[in-house]
Amino acid sequence: MTEKKFSGYIKRGDITCAEVIDDEIIKVEPSAPLHIKHRGNFPEWLKDRSADLDRSYMRNILKHLNLPVLDCETAVKYVHAVSVTDTFWIKPNNSGLTYKDVIFKNDLYHKAALIGDPDLFSKEKIHSPEITNLGSYNKGWKLVGGEWFMYKSGLPLEIWSEIFTFSLANRLGLNAVEYKCIDGFSVCKCFVSDTSCFEPAKAVIGADTSYEKNLDIMRRYNLQKEYFDIIFLDAIVRNGDRHEFNYGFITDADGINLAPNFDNNMAMFWNGIPTILDRKDPLVLDFKEIIKQNEYDIPRLTADDIKFAYDRAFNECAGKINMPAIPFDTVLDFCLNAYRQI
Image 1 (cartoon, rainbow, N blue to C red):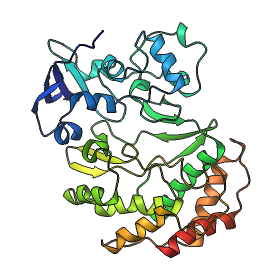
Image 2 (cartoon, rainbow, N blue to C red):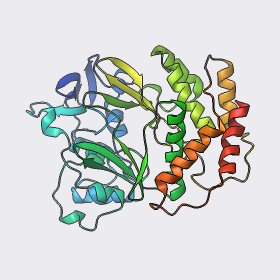
Image 3 (cartoon, one colour):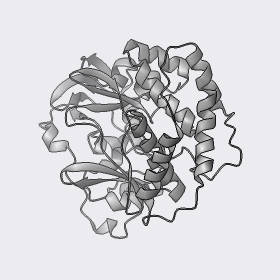
């Protein structure tokens, strides 16, 4: 059966920012999503808002909701394309819904999305934020005191690497999302306000994450420095997972800014402690080449900064996950060898 095409409006809160007829964008306002303004593809925008439906626990949630498994567009439409990380949603023609009607109000499927819930199929069917919870790792949104927190599963080294990277960024004065270890998971607070929207880089650049393409975009918005801060840290901690959904923009009434650095669980020693520490890897070499052609004040990195991040990461993880030993000298050489080349 072919999914019925959508006709109606893309809303930002209760403001209409685009009109759609049979999945075709026919009118775009300045407040529209960056994807709609730059790429103009409504079905692709819907798909890009979907959780990775290959995650095993997500399939159980879809079955519970009587939704077709692995059909991104149908799943996103089911929740009116609402996401915790922005205020966009879709309103069909002749609908009386308001933003207050469609926003997520509970975290009933938090456990089901994160680790699996044997009681899922006995629970109420709701519009869940897990449907638009992006990423390949098992994760779940938890509502605490009226605020949303992201819980993400991972091996001990992945959680440690996430916390180490935030700690080093924080120490260096770089804008980054704070991560903690809670109940054996990597946890961060949703980093957008009630009136701002996170929009992934894919919305503007497509799938091209090359430094050159990104800098062309960043110059349009005068965000070169903020972008260099992210890829500088990527080079130091060897985060090779900076794909088009792992960074992006914050848009609000004041304009557009780069989102804080987030999602670094595949940095540092996430899959084991390396035996070669000379850091002749592409992340270092490519960054070194790109800054030859651009102005950027490289942050000062010292052994004390690395020790601060190392200690904080271990202290945060202590007694919460089964951490293997990571010699400080190995971490020091790993980071400083990259820094010295840069």
